[in-house]
Image (cartoon, rainbow, N blue to C red; front, top):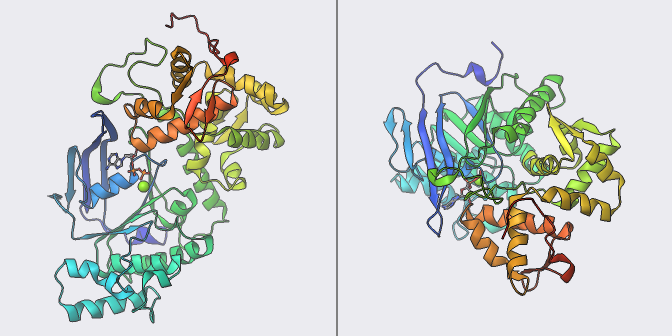
Length: 458
Ligand code: ADP
Ligand code: MG
C-alpha cells in the first residue's frame, strides 16, 4: 500500500452520501436552469477529495448543498446516514474570498463558529487561541482583517473553519485569491496538518480549478461537466507524499486528468431545460439556444500561432502552462478552435487542421473571412445578425439580447455568452458594437445577409 493519506483511509461507512442530487435555479423570467443533474457521490472518512470542473458548472452549488447551506431540488444528501435538512454542524467551509468580518478582530472572527454553537466564552477563547497558534498567526489575535495580507486573512479563514473541529472540511477554491508563493506555503502547511493528523478533520472536499493543485493535494479527484453538471470521472490519486511536481509520475497524473478534462466536449449535454422536446428544426436550434465556448479571438489567435510554432501539434497541458492559463481558461479557447474547425483536440493534444494552418499564415482580413464563414453554423450569431437585419434602423440595445439569452442561461452565463458573441461578431465584421451606448448595429454594407443558408429565413 502506498504511503500517505491512503493509509489514513478508514473502511467505515460513508460520511456523506448524495443520492440523485439535482439543482434547478429559476431565472427572473421563470425559466428553470438545471445546474446539477442527478449527482450520486459518496465521501468516506479519510479522504481528501478535489472537485474539478469548468467555471459556472456548479461546484460551489454542490458544496453548499453538501454542507446544508442550500437544498437540492430533487434527491437527498445524507450525513452519517441522516438526511441533511439545515446547515450541517459537523461541516465547515473555507471560502475563496476569506469572508471575514472587517469589524471583528482575528480572534473574534475565529470564534464565530463557536459562538454559533453556543460554546462558553472562556472555552471559546482558549480554542481560538490554539487555532490561531496552529495556523501560524500568533501575535495577531487583536489585529483586524484590513491590517493583514491576503495570505494571513486566509489563515484566519482556515482557523475559523477548524475551530469547530469539523468532521468535514469544505474549501471553495481556497488558494485562488492568493499570490503564487503564499498559496504554495498554505497548501503545504494544510497538507501537513492533515497528513500528520494534527487536525481532527475526517474528510476534506476541495473545489479547485487547478489540476496541479488537485494532483498535489488530493487522493481522489472528481471531475464535473457543465450545463448541467454531472460527474464525468472519479479517479484515485495514489501518488505517495510528499509529492514532487517534477516527478514523472506527477506529470503523468496531471496529464491523465488533463485528458479527461479536455474530453468535456464529448460529454457535453444538449438536453434542454424544462424537459421539453428538443426542436432542432429552426436554424436557432429550437427553443434551447446552444451555448458557445467563451474563447475570445485574440486568445484564439495567440494559441493557434503558438501551436503552429510547435509544428502544428502540442500537448494542451504544456500549452496551458506556457500561456499561464488554468485549464478552465484554456478549454473555452480550444473549444472555440474546434468549433471554427481550426484545430482538433486528440488525447490531450491540440492539433491544427489545414484551415487552422492557413488561418495562422494569413493576414487579418483573411482571418476575418475564415471566422465569418465558420459563424454561419453558430445559432447564437445567426440569431443576433437576423434581429439586426430585421430592425428598420439596424440597431439594437445589448440588453435586448441579454434578455433573450437569460431565457436559456443563468444571468452570469448569459453575460459571458453575449460578451463572447459580440467579440466574435465584431471580429468577423458581422456587426458593430458601440461600448458607450451598448448598442449593436449594422453598417450599410453589413445589411445583406452575411450568413446565407438554404432554409427559408424570414
Ligand atoms: P462554479 O462554482 O462551478 O463556478 P456555481 O455553483 O457558482 O458554479 O454556479 C453554477 C451556475 O448556477 C452558474 O451558472 C450560476 O450563475 C448559477 N447560480 C448559482 N447560484 C445561483 C442562484 N442563487 N440563483 C440563480 N442561479 C445561480
Ligand atoms: Mg464557485
